[in-house]
Length: 277
Ligand SMILES: Nc1ncnc2c1ncn2[C@@H]1O[C@H](COP(=O)(O)OP(=O)(O)OP(=O)(O)O)[C@@H](O)[C@H]1O
Image (cartoon, rainbow, N blue to C red; front, side, top):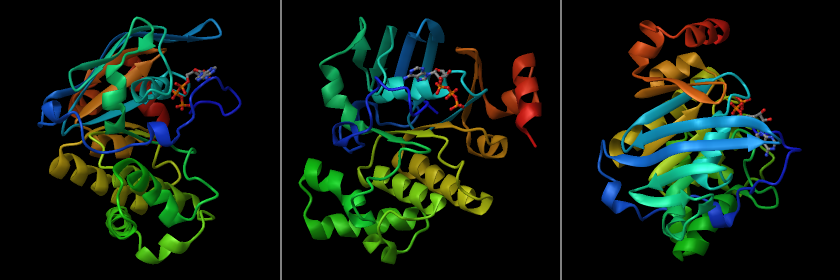
């Protein structure tokens, strides 16, 4: 995760909150939805992303693993528009959204398709759960209160929560808060969901439920998902592709079987052995 005290980044706001419709052209299973080429990023002279090429396909779960500080969150934040790379290009749904060191005009037409869920940036504390869930669809889609509430109840069910929590404040357990945060992203039916260590605060049965939610999203809705995780069991169960970051570079990009069972990359082997138990 990005250290909280290091700012200059864009915090998640209503403007970059996940929403629903665009990118229809690319919303067919197996098509490349996100294509990043030659991404470079340095913070205070330290190179974090070193010429990273990265792709995500619709209907795929791409699991991103790697040591703490290796650049995983920075990549997700670059795709989500929360961090601008120093160089490289990003295309979403065939539209170039970042090039020549800046967001393009196309970004405005695509950003609403990108949802992001964080480990710690979760809920707006001055709102109750219902307000957290319904604010974006009401404001951005003009949804009426009743319809928004119905959708909130469905989103909560998808993450294994009951309706009565809607009236609660956000003084919830870490696991409950995170599931509400996931439900909030689902409210806007994003085409692309970027999840940064979203199961770290959840106990294993709840993490397994979340995995089922993510599977349904990719299978039924064809959503492209990227999951940053340190949980290798979760990674091997969830992944269609495994991307291993090592010192700011993608050292391995393969099927889970090749990454975990037939691994030939020594850095990945060491990493997996170190975090497995
Ligand atoms: N806004 C920022 N300002 C300064 N340094 C930053 C900023 N964001 C990230 N970094 C640094 O970049 C490096 C990579 O951070 P990043 O969060 O991408 O790593 P990560 O692989 O996701 O790590 P973790 O698994 O611990 O979340 C870290 O050393 C971090 O301190």
